[in-house]
Length: 267
Ligand code: 4GT
Picture: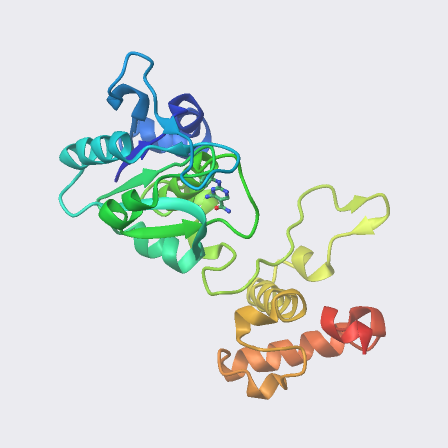
């Protein structure tokens, strides 16, 4: 898969392909990253990319003409049908199912804003989709682009080794991940749950599923399309086996007030 990133800070974005899973994916040719700096497409000797906002106010806005030239240049190099994505807090919140869908495409053009953002007409003319990392402000879209490159790359076939399978990740089934432990067996008097030491693999799988369901119910009932007051039997997102496991978890954990779902603590 090919990523074309439009950014005033190419070194920042390139760092994602220098190390880790994404670095290895680049070395092995699973992904390709090309950065385009709008400064190289500006018209004047000062290499101007920004200007003062119409209507006044603080900060600067990235200029339409320079960005349009850069995007159109990137489009000529990118695979046919490559979508242009703008990273901004006004976008749709990024989640694993959208990441999964984007990981199927041949390429993406990721447009990163700086300053107060970009001239709106660039969005109207050239942007296909707008994505946000969440409800907070960053100084630029670059970290968003790097997040997308990382999340998408690890879903490319062969990107992860045997020991890092994407199938078992959080959100693969819209559930939070279960707890993990490694040696030693005791850390400052805290012990590993006995079932994990039993060698009984069906029991271990069942325990992990139970923990995932329970943790999701307690911390993120929205992922199950539930609220803390929804009866477990009414959760349509769950199979009968999962409902049974969740009920078991709640019996194990929710006998005391401290373990009630977050929202119920106040009641
Ligand atoms: C937040 C996000 C993002 C910014 C986010 C335009 C100029 C946007 C600065 C940029 N802030 N980008 N993608 N929550 N800031 O995803």
